[in-house]
Length: 480
Image (cartoon, rainbow, N blue to C red; front, side, top):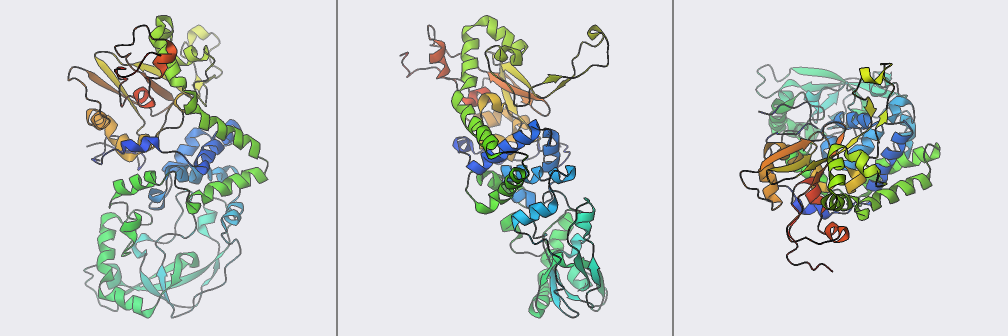
C-alpha cells in the first residue's frame, strides 16, 4: 500500500481512472497564464518562493481546494503573501467584494439557525476554526441573545485584522447529532458559534432534521469527522465534490477539466491579486504582459525539438547534453530554467575540499531512450515540468490519474497513449519531486538518414519528450 504525506502526494495511490489523453491540446485562458506569470514575477523579486507556493497549495483546506482548478489553487497559494505582509487581508477582501465592516447582530434568542457547510469567504489557507465539524450543516436554536462582539480567531491566528464577529450559543438536540444516541430526546449540546458560520433556518428545517436528516449527517461524520468542511447531511455535497471520501478522483479530474473555461468566479481571486500588486507598484501591467507573451511563445519556439534534433545529428553535443544538459543548451543560447541554478557561498575555503556545489534553482536534465530503456517523466507531488524548454504543460500531466499511475503502472499509462513496449525494454520513471526538470531524448526513428536538423525537428513531439510516446518513422513524410 502506497504511503502518502498529504492530499497532494498521489504517487502510487489506487486510482484506476483513465487519463484524458486528449486534454493535451487544451489552450490556457488569459487569466491562467497571467496567474503563472504573477508567480514568476513575485519569485524574481524574492516575494514568493516555489516552495512557499507548494506549501500554500498543500495547506489549502478541504473541500474547497478539491473544487478548484489548477490555477485557482495557484492564486489561492499566492495569497499567502499576507504572511509576509506584502498584502493585507482587508485589501484582498475589498477587491473580492467581501465586507470589511463589523457586522450587525443578525440573530436573537429562539431563532432557528443552520451552521454553514464551509465559510462563505474564499479560503486561501487552512483556517484556524473554532466551529467543530460535528455540527456542520445542522440546524439548531439560538439559546440566548448575542453573547457579545468577539475578535475573530480566524484572523488572530494569522495576525490579520478582521472585523469582530457576533458570538452566539446555539443548542442542538443530541439525537440530531449522533445516530443511535441512547439518551433522552431532551438531551442537548450547546456550542459557541460566530455569526459568519451561521445562516437563517426555519422550524420546518429543524423538524425535517428530526425526522431523518441526522442519518445522512452521521454517515458522513463516521467516514471522516476529522476533516475540515466535511459536508454533513447536505444533498449537494456529492454533486459539488465537498466530501473528501466520495468521488475524489472525479472531483479532481473535473477541476482539471474546468481549466481553460473563462469562468468569472474561477478567475476572481487571481484578478484581485494582480490588481492589488499593481496598485502597490509591486508589478506593472507591462511586466505582466511581457511574461504572459513569453509563456505563450515557449511551446511555439519548439526549443525541445531543436535540442533533440541537434543531439541526433551531433554526437559531441549529445554527449554534453546527457552529461550536463543545462550547460549544453546554454551554449546554444537557450535558458533551460525559469529558476536557473546559482552558486551559493561555500563554507569550505578550498573548493577541492567541497567538490559538491551548493545550488539554488532547478536543474535541467536529459535522459536517453535506447533499445533497452524507455524513460517516462512525472511529478507526483505537484506538476514540475521543463516549461522553459517544452512550454506550458498539458492538462493530463497535472491530473491526479497520471500522477498516481505513472509510478505504479507506467506500462499501462504508456498503453493509453498508444505506446506498447517490448517486455525486454526497461521502463525508467523519473519523479521530479525536487529541483530537477527532465526531458526525454527519444530515439531517432528509422528512415531519416540524410535528413537535416530542420526536417528532424518536425518529427519530435512534446509527448515524446515527456516519454508517453515515441518518435515514429516518417513513413508518409517527404524529405522536402
